[in-house]
Image 1: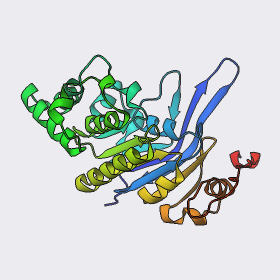
Image 2: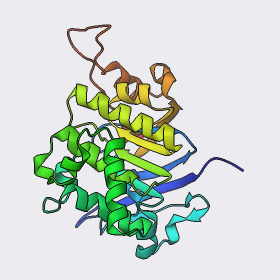
Image 3: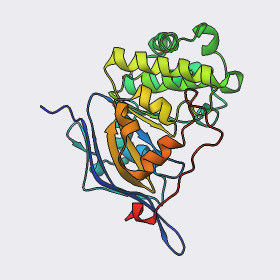
Length: 278
């Protein structure tokens, strides 16, 4: 049996406008096994929209179409809204970019994480609290009882991101989509969050899609990388081979990445070619 749990063929996401249609994702095809798959590209390249499409989270009037979009043999294209609700959280979860906009400001941390446990695991309030405290410990929060009672505005950026990870993982999903989970954090906290993700993915045997614009992070954290430009996947390679990329866009991104080992007075800029979108 193939380990390719997620199979996507010719995924397209469009948004109709008054005078034209915006093609956010164009004919994207890829698979995901028990691995860490990175998706990189500039802002607007279609990374986050691809992740949202896999979870049925593209807002209206956005339209998602695909020749094939399956997870563990299940046709995601045929999902009803109830099907999506049963799938999201329990089988597939997504960590958003910024906890300030993703956490409910009028509910405590404990209420929000516990609600996920009660909804997907059909457990009672006492067991949900026990699971919540255990999950807060798993994401290395030192005082889980205290944080359990706090509201999102009382958390630092790094603490908020750990709470988001705890909320997405408490129902023990098989696949986690992390949408730039460290982009709003400083480097020290970013590394700590990546270590937490690394440990949890290895311990739980999860599949991971890691969306980022940071090639350095992706190269060190992922197994395989998809490079997106203008909604298209222009190249796929092993993360360790990013320095030897063949597509001119990928090479331009690599050249524009700052390095402490080889300091330069000026970073290279990306010169785009219209033929890349053909």
